[in-house]
Structure formats: structure tokens, C-alpha cells
Length: 145
Image 1 (cartoon, rainbow, N blue to C red):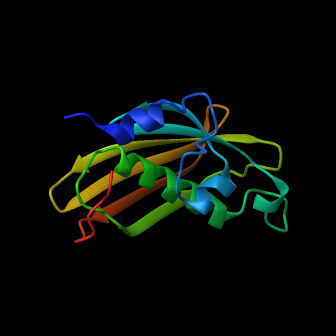
Image 2: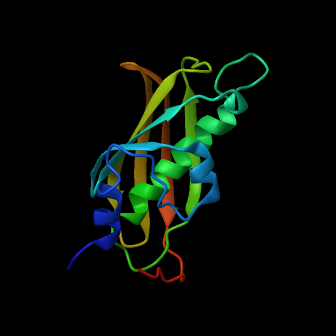
């Protein structure tokens, strides 16, 4: 069976993911770096409106980057039903500042029939600056396309 969602995302490698149906994802403006069915890599430039009063990348935006990339990783699994996020656990290690480029890499840890577990890490250069885990649970919402 052909996975059209995976192929669509792969067509954006090296470019911003303007094909996302999410207005928030478009605001984040992530560039797709690598894609396979169990992992995605996006990079994001830290813009002024993404920072907190201390001038560093806002924790809420870090969580949003993780949640968005985890959601993209879920969508390319090709499941018939939507799996909404039921939790997102984030640990913050080091700051990033305006003008920095951060990389988010996700990995599907376990894909069950009712729960999918995903891990995500954020890097500045090669230094891990945040890490997340998330569970997504099957719903009755059918995915079109």
C-alpha cells in the first residue's frame, strides 16, 4: 500500500513544510531535513516572537515544536484513524536564543493498535537542549487522504 502522506513529506526535504494543514506549523516555519516512516527531522530558526523576556526560546514554543513534529511523525505512519496526543513530557537542559537554529528529531518508540509512543530531542549544534516523550491514543476520527 502506498503511503501518500510519507511521500508528501519527503517531497519537502530541504524546504519549509508549507504543505502542513496546521496554521501553527506554518507559523513555526520548520524546514524538513530527513524523513522515514519512524522518524522525522526538522530545523527551526528561533525568531524574536518565539523568545521569552530573557531572550531565549520560550518553553511553550519548544513544547509546540515537539508536539508539531511528533504529530507529523504520527501522520506519516499511514494509520486510518487519528491518534491525538494524550501527554507530552518535556525536559529542558540548555537555552537557545534569537537567531539560533534548532533541530528536532523524533523517533517512534512503540506503535501499538491503540497507543503510539514517540520520543523527540532538540539540538543546538550537536548539543541536546531539550527532550520529550509523548503518547498518542487512537480515536474514532477517520483520516482523509
